[in-house]
Length: 316
Ligand code: MN
Image (cartoon, rainbow, N blue to C red):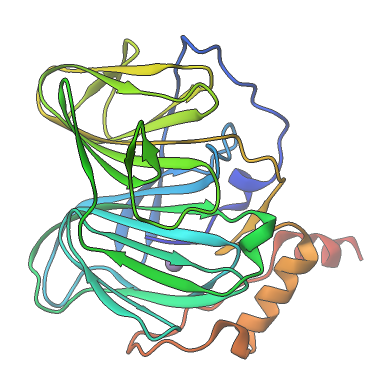
């Protein structure tokens, strides 16, 4: 449920342009392999690199896992971002270089803030057998906090809000007065929508851009039908978001004030410059104390070289 980001999806290709508020920009997620699991990567893509401060969305599973086989992502580093882990089904064990050791279950939030640097592993619990299904997202940290200390939060319960067609769980942010206790360094929102057949109206902030990821079932988003594997970008300027379902459906709605700092994402790092990425890449390779150590039996994940290094070498 993390890393590596493909170069073609993160290098600048020009502005995609925001659709008018009445339209939905639907893209198919790209399949990727993370550890032993297949994931559908909704962000970043060439056409859409961020939604507010959200810069990475992996939809993982559903996959059948056992006590011996499941998510086995060894220690790897992060910089300048928060990881948001949210499960629909299953269990995952989080361990990090701060000494955290935390099992997460459906309805709970694991939120890790990398700041200047952290490392973590995501492991099977060794006792769970069944479906594993969830999402992992990254939130880019702003300049004020991205050089700061790493941190980890586990929230066993989150506030819920009844909507006309289902229930919203506020994972991060403020849904029209229903506020998550999770740390937030920018003005962004992440909610889980558990919907029944029928219409649902979600209150929206016109300053925010929004996007939706369908987790189970199918949803019509402003009239466009979306299923798991699709990502719908809704732009800014909305007072509400109108959804309709023909059967039970589950979706994730993310949003935020457009992030105004140009970021450079490569591998598991969110930075601003190539030099910053080069430093992080080298320090992880050298097991520098910047990223600490994780008490895990899984092997550390090695990092390759950034594409500009290859280009420089082939130019010579
Ligand atoms: Mn990670």
